[in-house]
Length: 348
Image (cartoon, rainbow, N blue to C red; front, side):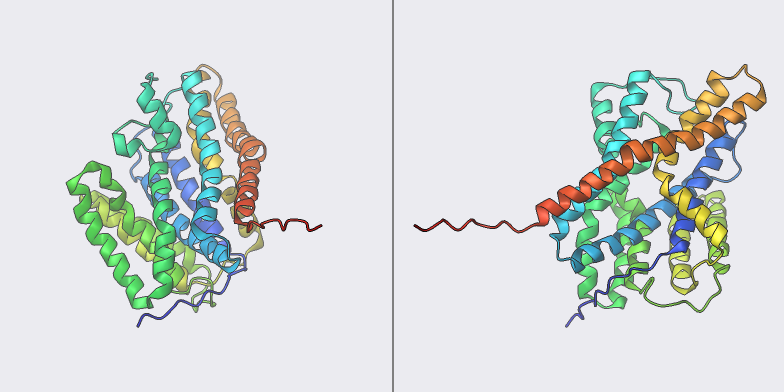
């Protein structure tokens, strides 16, 4: 008989996860910044997105654990919260890009999207209808949204099976990633399945439930090592396997490395992680303004504008749009979670 997973809410901070998220968005940012001036030697952007996929699934497993502990309706509460977390900011950016006729990237000319392409970008299902993203970084969000649908099921399955079963699920995701996308391009979500499943594996293997034996400095080295494996695989024509291996290496390292304990690094990474969604969605147009709109301006003006926009846009969007909608999502989820009380008719 399957052994039920013992849920114990993990309430500690995890500086390593903030570090990972900060590294992921920094990789994407650096890749696109280098791309303004020439072809990058390493696809840091792809590595960053795959690290995001691992991070997302691990963090959301812990979020599902908290919902389960509070005995909230698991699926309804999770989906409501994720909708308000992901869609308001992405929808706002899509509307601004289309209405302002902004290019996909600084090096990409503007193309007017069809109504169907606009709708696919607005609701994040471009991969299902083969629609191009209106901004290059938006390509990854449909996979995250579609994975949200699956994660609660994986959480419930994982609670009922032993750790060996979780490893089997990861191998199953590898088989699915090799076969299902060949049947239809609309199933290419499964080609990223092992990256997401690495986070699920790390969660059920006990991430955060104990202190690892390895010193904290091994954590950044493992991320660098995983990135090197990806680069070697990419150069050899095995980019898919490289991505899966990278996320699995990071997953294993996450289980054995102690949390980073350098306060300056932790504070900086926590700050970058906090604004990372806005950084991810806006940095291309910050670069477009700095290097295309201000192409004839002095270099000092271009770089000052880039820095100001790269900080200012995510900061403003977080505090005026992202955070309020996250709070609204939590409020709606809590309201939906309250049991309905049937009023007792008054007696005379």
